[in-house]
Length: 494
Ligand SMILES: Cc1ncc(COP(=O)(O)O)c(C=O)c1O
Image 1 (cartoon, helix red, strand yellow):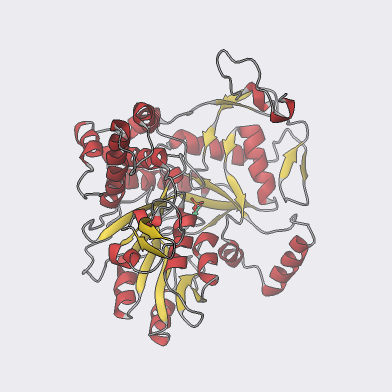
Image 2 (cartoon, rainbow, N blue to C red):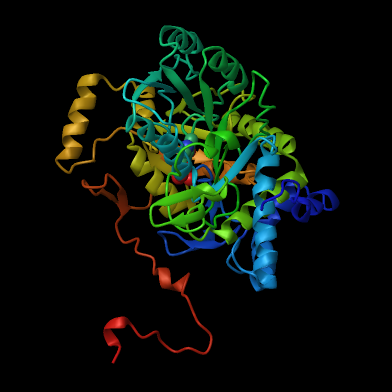
């Protein structure tokens, strides 16, 4: 049985090894990896796509390697390795809970594969009825919108001209639909503008309206300290989700934190091995959470990696990470604001409530074209399009309902070439000014049309490709099993 307080096996590292931001940069696996450019040269990759997924910390990789000799299935084995792996895996849950300030005597941490799975699980478990209301916002990632739509009415609170959530509308909706609102579900930080919502204030209003608060912390957890507050505090966050692959531990884990009592009730979201105490042919007694909600053999390595990544982040301190990223935003926007033809979205001057997400367009150039040029000619990894938040992006870009209908019809007809969008450059805790300089330098080239390639758009995907840019990926990565020459494919089996 999982006992809270086992996290010491991870905690000692953060206490005895304070790290600096420079240590974090040096620790990034694959930092400065040379990548091919269109002109046939190579340059160190500039990773500005951290909002999508981050590279791994070397220390996380090391922890996984150290743990692998002890790896075993957990919870039901009797051998030493299984007992050890169980203790480590259970402790990893506590590390996550402590990281977000959850009271682990009353809350549980459920490991999933990512934030999307956490939200689907919560939506499936929340006992929502068709006439219930979930109050969400226009700013949400589809992962924090579509799962709720499957169950009940979703109210999308609007955003103001400056991109911030319309808090007056939110309070009004809580009042108007009091009694029907079961849950307020919103992102702690937007994946488009990086804007952070005042989650504790919203928690107070939510609780006063008799509802519960879910915070999608996929973009918040890697960048800011989080405190869920005690369960009886009106500022308390009831449920919270995060993804390890956005926190330097891309080993397939996510975590959902919420009240034990909530998950004790009802049937698990998914059923199978591990979720039960006893089964007869006509009855099932469920196990306690988190086991009740972690059906099947869990992702032990992913959970351990997430705990290790948290240990590394804590060795620097989330306050330090936050200050560093704000200073870097200051530096970046100082430069970007001076570029002619660059249209910036969201706040460009105050960053205390904005994580390191920079979205922009270049006047007269398709977002997909700009992103392709940055990749092929600058070795810079960014992302473009609508970033799984179509309504928010279209709102910011002032797409009219009629245009929206036209784009929808075009996409249905297989043509994504005119889908609106933006370019997003996103920072991590290890990013520095040289990354920004590389981006700005390439944008200056794009603006003055100092481009080597000829780019064509694929109508079906909307993506742009540089003619002649066909790198041989096997030159860069090839899985080589020492001593084994060639892998026999199933079709070749005798
Ligand atoms: C705000 C937000 N919520 C949810 C998600 C979904 O996360 P995942 O893909 O890890 O499930 C993302 C991913 O980018 C996100 O940015």
